Image 1 (cartoon, rainbow, N blue to C red):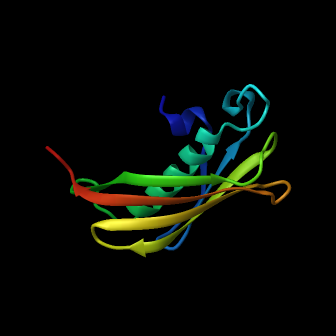
Image 2 (image 1 turned 45 degrees about the vertical axis):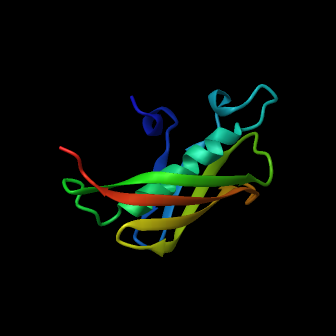
Length: 125
C-alpha cells in the first residue's frame, strides 16, 4: 500500500491547469495535540503538484521528481476533509513550479499554502 492509498487521497480534478485532491482528516494524520500534522499538508501539496507536473507526460519516457517544497501553515485543522488545489506557476518542459493551497472543505478555512518545484527527468532503465 502506498501513501496515497493509506491516506485515502482522492482526485477530484486533474488537468494541466488545475489539480484538486481531497483527504479525510483521521486520527492517524494528527499530531499529539489533535491537529493535522504539518507534514500531512506538505505531503498533500507535493502529491497535488506532482500529479499536475505529471499530467500529459509519457511515463515510459519522463517522470516528475520534486526538487523543492515550501509549506506555510496558516491555520490548524482538526476534523473534516482537506482539499488541496494546485495550479501551475510555470509549466516548462524541464522545470515546473506549482502553487498549492489547502482548505478544510466543510468550513472553507485556508490551512496551508505551498510551492512545489519539480524537475522532469528521463526514465532510467
